[in-house]
Image (cartoon, rainbow over the protein chains, first blue to last red):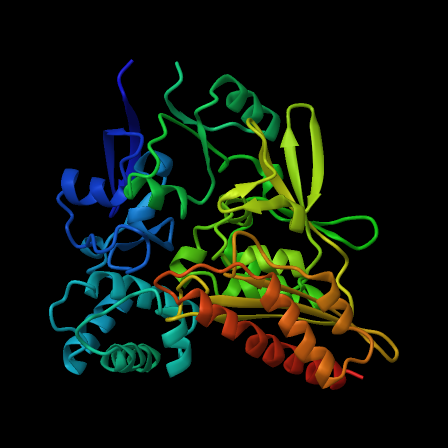
Length: 158
Length: 284
């Protein structure tokens, strides 16, 4: 028998059918098969958060998810989140606050921040820190990211 | 055909698959196993997914007031579980500081205890809570106390073809459970952790402490627990710290030297103990 598995998943609202090896991660599938390179491969160990996407609405590490285990599930990456009003507000606030420099971590930051704002419309500084501690950034020193997330939250409230 | 991904609908079916494919690995949340695959420490040809097994999900109350926690309970849900109250707060507190929020959406209690990395947060918390681990083998379930379940570095009481099906917690008792984690940054493995439960009776206290990150398995010293129970003096606390220090077997790694970890034990113990005592004192 072949060593690949047939998997059907939904990515950014489009159905895709794939044949993948058992040990292929969702991150590899997204980047190398589907050319969705928004989710980044940083540590590949679940530590850095650059690969954060949502599966059935829940933020997860694409690098720790096996594509074969995602059968029937719905994946959202930053490429598919452009029309989302929370993501749009976050993007504006990130730009205004200078909450990115190289941008490598930004797709993961945005997906993680969106999940936070959907649960908590007005997070405190501490709540942003706690919720997003799994998204590393080597450029900003975090303060600007926290400011941007809270600014977006305020704007979405009004 | 011993390759592929299998989705058993029951624990019995999962055990049959494991019996048929001795090299297969179990996957629950994937947080540890997939990291190992990425690091090329594991390359399983067959995976048995627990995702569709209903009996591994949720928390149920048992006769006598204890709780049966399904192996697939995610860290996120454990961190928010209201029934982990009183002394069982130690479980909630430990779950809430595992890795980061996104990883807590993935990882499960069964996966964490099976992985048995001594730097994990659950092992000392489960020992302090007097939890027992339910092991499923073909045709039989048995329970092993947490302190006997964790055997060595990444080694547990699980035999070949067996799996963790649940974690049993004793009835929550009035008092507190806390988990202090000393780590380099938020989300890291513990350099040293202290899991502590303190029961408050009419006059005296009963304390149970387990130390994480200081050897191959959570550190539990009955004599230290005895010293910290009743009506402990400052001298008892100092002596308990020394006993735990003497029993510890830490290593040098990127999180700290063995010497540094030994130094942390009595200091962290004292901090956790005083916090717990103040908290049960305030409960009167």
